[in-house]
Amino acid sequence: MRLFGQLVVGLMPITPKAVIRWVSKRYVAGSDMQSAISLMRKMSDEGACFTVDVLGEEINSMDEAQFFFEEYSNLIDSIVENDLDANISIKPTAFGLLIDPETALLNIENLVKKAAEHNMFVRLDMEDHRVTGPTIDVCTAIHEKGLHNIGVVLQGRLMRTLSDIADVCATTGKNSDFRICKGIYLEPENIAHTKYWDIVHATNDAIDAMLDSGAYTAIASHDNPVIAYSLAALKSRDMGPDKPDPRHTESPNLCSGKGPGYEFQFLLGVRGDVRRKLSEQGHTTRVYVPYGTKWYEYSMRRLRENPEIAFHVTKALLMPWTNKR
Image 1 (cartoon, helix red, strand yellow):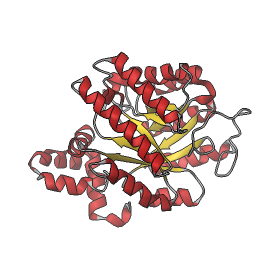
Image 2 (cartoon, helix red, strand yellow):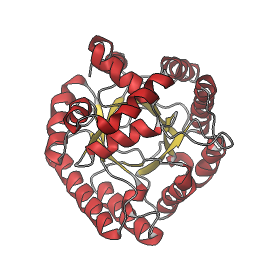
Image 3 (spheres, one colour):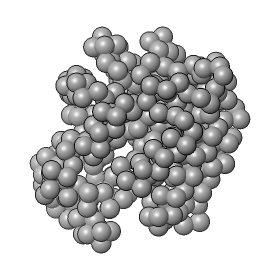
Image 4 (cartoon, helix red, strand yellow):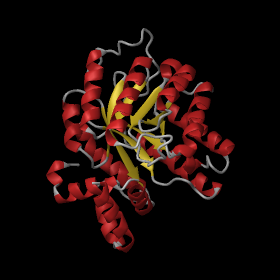
């Protein structure tokens, strides 16, 4: 599968941009905010809620960071105006984390404050290992300022993740809120698991640690072994649809749209059949909705970072019945 992905990636530079755009339409809402709003209004009938990402990361100047601050600020307004069950996901490097960390933190804090006014949650997306620690630091620093409508993504493939869970929970307590995923970035073997089943088992271990810590646990996976393990883990802890979270005597400060201590998350356009089945069973399900003018760079970067994605994309195109949006 990986060899096939590498072959596809090798052909990308000579593939017409129009073809890449056609492929990306399944996985990206569009190039502007209204495209994302329209898509979410349409998909709301399926019982899903959403987290919205403005495409772009690792900027070159703080002028670019200002664009992202203003775009996300307007996005919050638009979500509220359209009465959508949605929160926002942001990449700290898009706010200048690698250029001016203090200004980046201030801008993210101001955005979290605005979201809090509407009881809206903000997720800090996790990027490659260079910013794992700094991203976690941003999250805990904002919690320490009394803003609890923010959480971070952790990646199962990184060997540090169990330690990070413990450290974050020690700071944020009952308000700890994670998204756990396998991780898309191909990291060095000395800091990350690189084999499929090792990554799956590490991700499952992280899910157990999050659930046992009392943290809100957003399970972001399309892998059957992770989803099946998660359902069993929830059942063993007496957690599930329409049940109060048994892990807390005092309820955490959850934002609107949250489930009873957990939820399942899916990328737009991926495994919609599984998402709908979980939703029909009563589980809270959330769709990750990216949009923006950087759709081409986003698509190419994801393929370069993890060529195995090309296999799944090609399968979805050739056998769409296996991957209904």
